Image 1 (cartoon, one colour):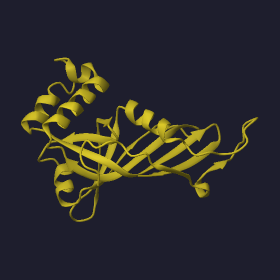
Image 2 (image 1 turned 45 degrees about the horizontal axis):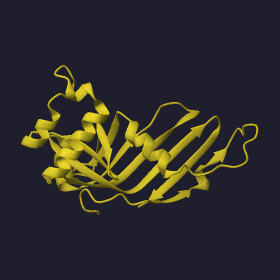
Image 3 (image 1 turned 60 degrees about the horizontal axis):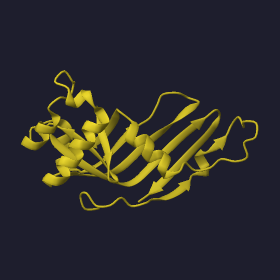
Amino acid sequence: MTMQGSPAKQPTTELDTRYSSALTPRPGATDVTATQWAEAQRLLEAAEIFWVSTVRPDGRLHVTPVIAAWHDGAMYFSTGPGEQKAKNIAHNAHCALTTGGNALTEGLDLVVEGTAEQVADPALLEEVIAAYEAKYGPHITSPEGTFHGIGDAFRKGDAVLFEVAPTTAYGFGRDGGVYTHTRWAF
């Protein structure tokens, strides 16, 4: 695992041709190509809702929606210290964050796999709070916002902030009948 707040590594990119196809080739389309990491990162930065998957001590999965921020090469999400996600991570820190759309013929679904590590560094904590505020704006900064006060909750320990440095990520693209499966290894 990378150290918290360390510079982002550039992944290797691979198109998995077993799951990529041009089912309905578009006029002028020549071949199917892998999605570039820069495009995936742009979508991770813009996505508002992610689904975090963790593993319970008995092996059952736990999946729940969260807000999250991409910052300096890692995903950050939070939970209450007594919530199921936190309990699961204490037992098994492997997790996945997923985002995307629900359309059959367009979009890019993303899965980021890694190991969750609680953020303890105060300077990194402030950087991630700023990233959350920049991304979610009034949802966090306005007194009427759904997540107002989350920064103070992180600082006080009322909410636990986790960093997930990707070990592997996947992109499942759909563009008018062209389907791609890209794998990024970090």
